[in-house]
Length: 263
Ligand SMILES: *[C@@H]1O[C@H](CO)[C@@H](O)[C@H](O)[C@H]1NC(C)=O
Ligand SMILES: *[C@@H]1O[C@H](CO)[C@@H](O)[C@H](O)[C@H]1NC(C)=O
Ligand SMILES: CC(=O)N[C@H]1CO[C@H](CO)[C@@H](O)[C@@H]1O
Image (tube, rainbow, N blue to C red):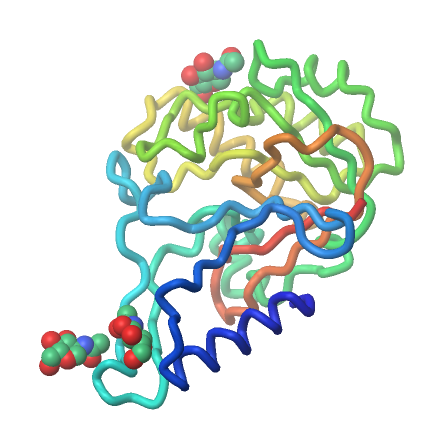
């Protein structure tokens, strides 16, 4: 939280507590924070209208409920949230596709924050293809790069801003995933859209088999962390420091995650 946010928070407190004109107070949402836009938020806002894998073809829908309100005599407003752990910008733990990893505790609460935070490369994937071995080769990602954010056609198509889940999204093909594992030092893979195939019966069998196997290739070693559905609109390709922090929930195989880039 920067000082502006503190200020705003105080402002809200004081206007509501002292009966000020809180109805005129509207937070202007921004995509960059801090001094000179140094921080780029690459996290999608969670909204009722965002696409949702589990609920497709419906969008996420209501996810916040107020359980106590000041209007009803409580000292503060309290809400609860409910959505599946792979909602919006989120991380997959190894246990997402491997049962024995779940029991062994390779879940979101034990993800390596050293992997989730550090220098990262944002690359543009050619827009005419899914991510195959040939595409991976053509990207010429230097050895030693451990974190890569792949921007694809999904961003151009604005898929995360559509209500309906779109199964024609671009993702890793099996050979692309295998090439990445075998030929690079990448440990953090960042997709622009859900590649999870939890709701498999909405995909054709062939696509499902392919994408499930890509997941298995990535997650088997437990060394690669998948962050999905990042918001990379308008961010120049290049090198940044990425910072991603999942919620620390015991026994969960996925978690919403807040990710930022720092120039
Ligand atoms: C607040 O009170 C109203 C009227 O009793 C009730 O309908 C509503 O459900 C309450 N809401 C909460 C969040 O407690
Ligand atoms: C990527 O693969 C999906 C099937 O999984 C397909 O619908 C889509 O057209 C492909 N995209 C491109 C750009 O080839
Ligand atoms: C959702 C909701 O009920 N919010 C309430 C929080 O508390 C303020 C102050 O009492 C109310 O104005 C809001 O309606």
